[in-house]
Each structure stands twice: as C-alpha cells, then as structure tokens.
Length: 202
Image 1 (tube, rainbow, N blue to C red):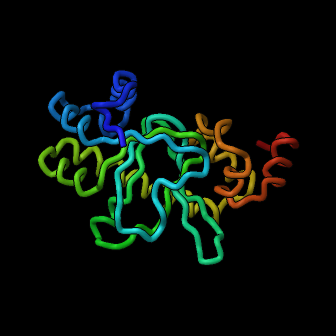
Image 2 (tube, rainbow, N blue to C red; image 1 turned 60 degrees about the horizontal axis):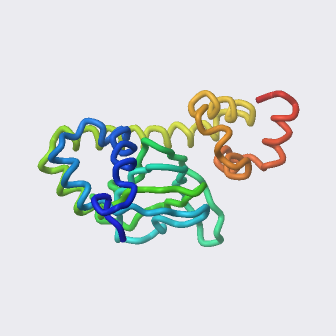
C-alpha cells in the first residue's frame, strides 16, 4: 500500500484531489494530514473496491476513471444505482453510521485510480473540521437524492425518456460508459439502447 505522501506521482495526484468537491476547500494542515492517511489504489475494469454485505468500509475519492455503485441479489442479478467519475467520491458512510453491513458494492467500470482511507479515520477527521464535514454530508445527501430520482425515473419514463434524462444530467459520461453498462443502469437491453441510437431517438 502506498500513501499519497510516498507515491511517486504525488504532485500530480495532489492537484487532482484538490479538484474533488469534498476536498477543494481544505487548508494546508488538513491536506497534510490526509496525505499521510490516503492510500492510492489502481483498479482494473471489473475490480471490486467494496463488496456488498461487508462491515469493513472505506471512503473513496476518485482520481481517474469511473466507478459504479451496485446492488446484487442471491442469483447474481445486478442493479446499478449510480456512476461516479473524477472529482466525485464514493462512500458507505450511512451504513457505517448505522452500524449495518454495506448494502451495495463499489466496482470499477473502467481502469480507475482512487485515494482511500478507512471510514473510521475519515469520520474522526471530519469531527474536528466542521466545514469539511458539512461539505461531505451535503455530497452524501446529493448522492442519495440522485439515486432516489433515478429509481423514480425507471418507473415513470419510457425508454427514450430515460436515456434523454441521463444525457441531460451526465453529458460527460455518455461516451465513456460501455453501452452494456449504460443499458443496465437505464433498465434497458443493450439491443434496445443500440436501436434507439440508430433510429436517432437519442
């Protein structure tokens, strides 16, 4: 495991993390603390950063690439709850606070690089830094609101409507997410998504 402070690309990674919505306003003292606690991890497509049902949880800041939050049933059927890319984060903070196993997994959609640290350490860091805690909790609430809106969308909009909403909300991700993954997120078959594209309906 390589901490940010000891990473050979630490200067570039520092700049990338400064653009993260949760970390952007931290002062020099906070950044110095994090550099000694954040571990830099490189993942390949399909790698799990977090498995559903575990109690050992971590906080993730995305440096490069795309992650997905997924829920799977006992038969292996998967539902994608959200995608997240650079300048975003992933967390199981709510489950950690509630003392429950994490209800979803976090998986690399593409090759990805993240900075991570145990949620216990991250929470302790936030308790002494109210401004950072407020920014983080606002981000957590935004993510929860996004997931709820997406779930409602799956029930209320037809197939073209679901795709149009995603394009409007996440134009930066449209060409970066594999079609099969995007179709799954929108509860469509890859063939339906391809047909909508070919017919010019999206």
